Every structure is written in C-alpha cells, then in structure tokens.
Image (tube, rainbow, N blue to C red; front, side, top):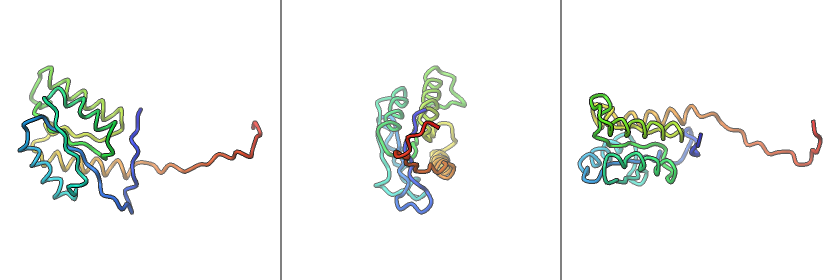
Length: 151
C-alpha cells in the first residue's frame, strides 16, 4: 500500500488541505463545493481545484491528486450516481476512485454517492479528521550504529 505522509491534527498550526476535482464545465458545482468547504473551515489557500475533460478522467485525476499533491482529502464532483446508474461508466468511476482511496490510504469522497454536494463536503471533512485522529504516532527510532552484535 502506498501511504501519503500526514501531518499531526491536534496542535497543528496548519489547516487541512482539501482537493476538489470536477469535469470541465461544472463551474456551478465547483463554486458550491468551495463555498461549502469555506463554511466547514477551509481557507481558499488550503483548497486545490482541478478539472478534467470528462467523467472517465475523474479516476486518473484522483490518482494525480493522491500521488502529486499534499492535500489531506479529495472531493470528486461526479454526476455518475453509483446508487441509481448501472452503466459501465458509473461502475468504472466508482471502482477506480475507491481503489485509489484504498491503495493510497487517502480519503476520497465521490459526491454522487450523496444526496447533495453539502453532504459530500461534510463527509470529506469527517473522513479526513477521522484518519488524522486514528493514525498511530510512529516513533522516531534511530538505529544504534555502535552496536555490532548479531543478537
């Protein structure tokens, strides 16, 4: 499993960094998502917004966010509803986004799985917070290079 580096949540001076991914021409929902994330405590400088040409490209766009950015979580604004749409495209987007989220240990919320963008944005903030709170503290262990025993 690939793991993104996380920052401490409690006592952390930096705000949560959140990504928003949408298809080209979806400015209205991007604006709605950004406004909602602001009300949930994200500043504009803590949000990264990118667009891809179409629904199928959302999967690769999500992978780029996981691999190349330092955001703590991603809101994917999709119109393919996994609860009502049985098309191959919907299945591909849902499966692809879920696999990236699991493979990268990276919270990704697919907006179409929720009844509104507001619910999806709240779910993203909840999952990012949950991950940060549950991540174990990894001790900084420095190997003893003076001990050359084989025991």
